[in-house]
Image 1 (cartoon, protein in one colour):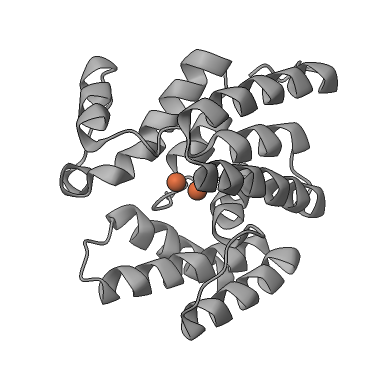
Image 2 (tube, rainbow, N blue to C red):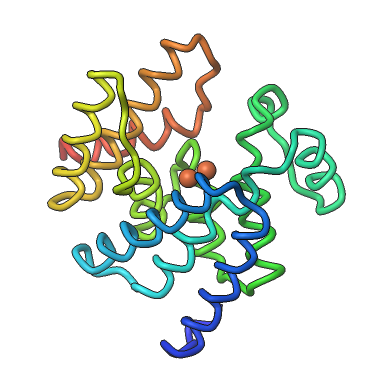
Length: 205
Ligand SMILES: [Fe+2]
Ligand SMILES: [Fe+2]
C-alpha cells in the first residue's frame, strides 16, 4: 500500500476486507480477526506505529487460515511460494505466507504489511515494529482466554508487558510459543530461535 491512502480510503478497504473475511472465515476466527485489529490499533498508538497499517494487517492476518491443507499446498504451487522444511511437515504454518500473498494481490498491501502477515506465526529475524505489533496483538487480543492456569497467567503478563515494551512482549510470546511447542512435541521453526536470540542480545547490550 499505498502509503498515500487517506483515512477515508482505509475505511473503505477495511469494509471490503471485513466483508471478505465474513464470507471466508468461521465466526470464531472472524471475531479473533476483529480482536487483533483492535489490539494492533491500540499498540500502534502506544508505540508510535502507523495506525492504518496496523488495523489493516491486524484484520487480514488470518485470511488464509481456513484453507484446507490441500488448498494451501495448491496455492503455494500456483503462486510460486517457497515452502521450507518445517512448513512441509506443519502445513498449517503456510497460512502466514499465503495470507501475505493474498493481501498483496487483492488489497495492494505494501511489503512491510505483507511481512507482518508473513512473520506472525513463527517470527523472523527481520521483524520491524509493525511485525512485532501484529505478532503480539495476535496473541493477546481481548477475545483470547485460556482454561489452562499457566497459559492464563502468561496471557495476563503478556498484556501488561505489551503496553510498556513491545520487544519484551515479543520475546515473552516467542518464549511461550517455543515452550508450548516443545510440550506438544512439535518442530520448532528456526526463525523463532533467530529472533529470540536477537531480542536477547539486544536486551543485554
Ligand atoms: Fe495466524
Ligand atoms: Fe491469528
